Image 1 (tube, helix red, strand yellow):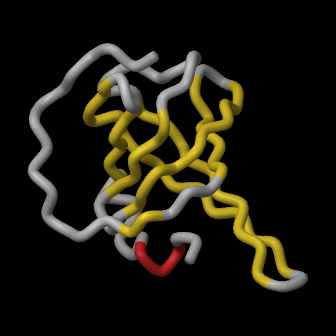
Image 2: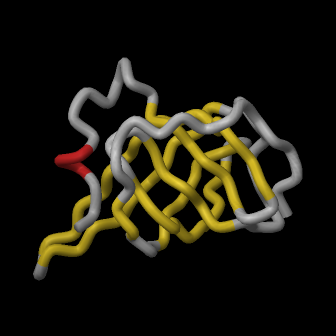
Length: 105
């Protein structure tokens, strides 16, 4: 369960409710999580037993199916907030200038 709490959240963009599987590359291996919602600035993940710590730099890997095409989107992020419900991650802004066009719909 998540149990650390980071700085209070100050949301700048609307969240889109998207529940989808995502992998996080952390500690050199992938961990599977479920998203609760996604925004242009980040993502909220459901709580899990194996969680990255506050401030951890991770790579989120989304597998997006569009018809017969499968696309893999790797987005670097940082764990910004942790609660008993899950974790809020913010995108690494320097590498993700156009995150919204790469998110699953």
